Amino acid sequence: ERVMLVMRSLCAIFIAFSVVVAVKPNAIVTLMSFSWGTVAGCFLAPFLYGLYWKGTTKAGAWAGVISGLVCSLGGALYYGMNAGMAPAIGSAAMLSSLLVVPLVSFVTAKLPETHLAKVFPSVEEY
Image (cartoon, rainbow, N blue to C red; front, side, top):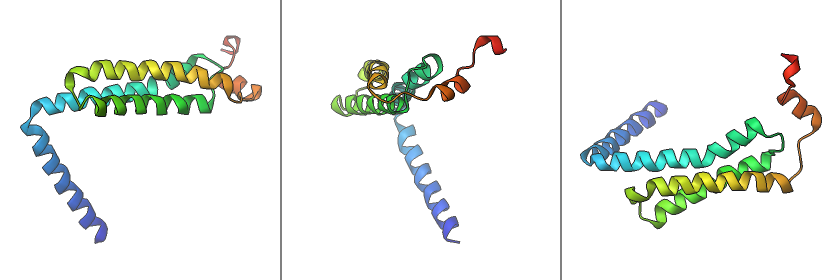
């Protein structure tokens, strides 16, 4: 009963928010620009380095996520959600993450070789 009440309340809030956003179509474009910039800033570097570089550490990946998030949210707040700045802010977030992941990975403990052998098998095994 209580869960149903919470779900109905959240649905009503979501519908009201959707109506407010739909009244200003430019707001949707701005929100999408910032959200995709934030997602790319958070996950691009940890994803790429995690796939292609054995030196990536857990701390490096987390530092990349946090730096991308801070850069993106900080830029959005600093420029007042200016839609014209969204591409530059997203690019800066991606760049900061691409720089932070290897820097932190170089100074933190490396993963054990046995783990790396499982994650990065040699090509000959296939």
